[in-house]
Length: 79
Image (cartoon, rainbow, N blue to C red; front, side):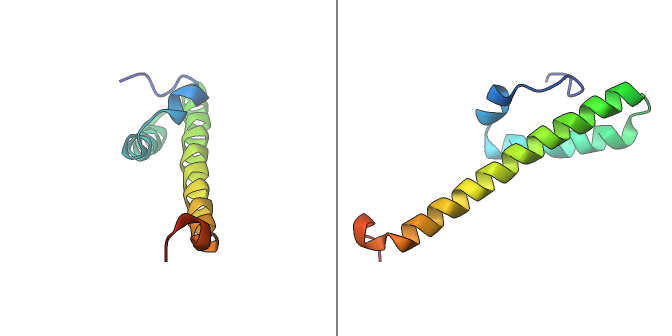
């Protein structure tokens, strides 16, 4: 696995599986709590923000899609 203290690429995050993202976020949080080096800790915190934002965007997109399906049931053929 890559070093989590280097800045992450948004393309890399966007192609990750949901469970991989959540595991990565947990791993970064653990690394933050163990880190003594201020620079490494800052990079880890930055990456944690990027990963969390990607998780958040996916949840919002999923909720918006569900809402759209519910409001457009006539067009989708769903009940």
